[in-house]
Length: 89
Image 1 (tube, one colour):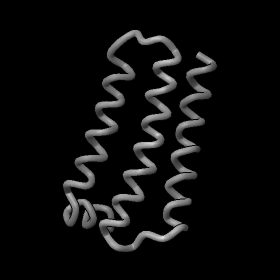
Image 2 (image 1 turned 180 degrees about the vertical axis):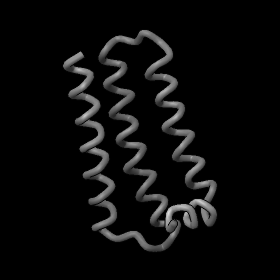
Image 3 (image 1 turned 180 degrees about the horizontal axis):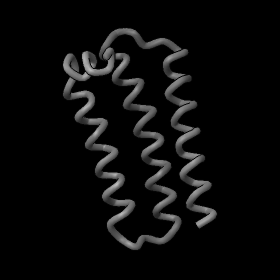
């Protein structure tokens, strides 16, 4: 419920997030890139997610180091999970 209210209040922020993830998915899955390029796309997405989270919370006015650490840890976790799947495949 809270998340829907947040999207209604800041639709542009979430549009940027969704577009960023969509573009990365399109680049990742559309072409037969070498593994190194795919790794770079995944790392770029992790960085994008982290910086988007920091920017979003600064816009809202509720940014603190804990929020930054949370976004950093989730970005590292997601990136490492996807990279490990790439390396095994």
